[in-house]
Image (cartoon, rainbow, N blue to C red):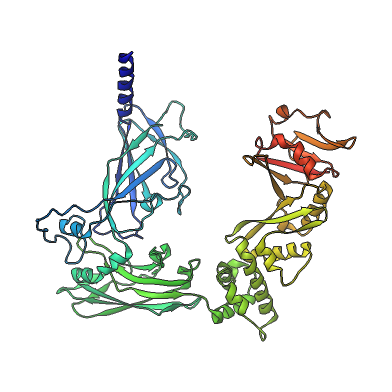
Length: 572
């Protein structure tokens, strides 16, 4: 017996130690300095070590198959009585991860870097099937910040983990191609990162090492549709001439209050000019403009702005001084935007002022509420009124997309339930039909697609629901989406979404009607009482008589809940 158990343990240990048929290697292009906010490429190299072709799924952005374990390593311990080595590196005051003196001075604590949230990254790359021939390898690109959240300065180790084919994935490959469904782990690689704050602390030292002093001047406020002029002064402190390719050798940084770089700032300088010749000690100025488009969609507040000269094989990347640039829309600016937008088409892409107001509708709620336009045109006053009410509605659904409007429904009528919507209409009470019509008028300012969620009281008759739905449909195409409600089982562990439609799409239909005053369920095709087990073998739709109450319906369709997620319901 002992021999059998020991043999099993040995077999299991050998199985665990069996090498993966795919060898995985991570790599990052070499650079003297990496700053959080850089586009850091991370390459995954897969090598087929077998004698047959293998296929797997590559998804370098959604983190379903792959994972990057990134850990900040603490600095080496300083032994008592030892003398620290002298600084070795790029220059005094500039951190070098290969320098023991620098590592001892930093002494970072260990830190596990949080993985990026699973799901599509900013630049989504759809998964694709990869075929690796025997003995061949393939290098696949990705971005480091698609895998992990980079936030702090430190020296890090990175290890890649990859699952070839997920159980739910079906790579499109010839049938004879074998799938690699095992896991592979790479050896660790090292990466040194600087936060923006720590990078800017080295600005003077880096300018001295490169032999160029950089001085940036900019206004303190960025206003909509009024580009700000920035001036960069370059002074060559070296003994020989230097040349700067403008703007290829330079890049603008705009950093939010949380220390994150705005991606759009990488492309802020679009005009190319002749190379800038820098004789020793002869400062030269370069001016360029930036517009509010770089910050459109970003939160109001103060942003740090600086320029940098990019790294070259023999030269360090070098930042300038940093400045504070405030981004906000005050009352005066909002008034100008409204006046200008009122004279243009009410379509966002043809009306940039209106588009900007819509983007910041929630942030401008208080500003809009205080605005008064007694001498403005009728169009301007009407637009202001629309934006003021739209700003009150905005908290209900802050992002563009599907907006669910909840209605409480009973035999006595229906009314709005959501607090932001009730507050928006508190100053001017109106019938529900008028309120829904008004929401439809304002939805373009909000970016909403409207759909109703009916919260129905138990004694409500089906005919009451049908009358309400017909009235909503008569308001126009903005309310064309089918209203719905959710039914949960008695334990609230499963639910079904009931969609109220005017025409059923399927042929498998259950009819709910009263026989001798009692609600019963029949199968439409046979006219016999329904057999739930058989009926639910295919998608089932419901047809309900107008005299059925919601509580009767709710009791009768209990077997559907948890078996079918979406149920079409027609009242007739």
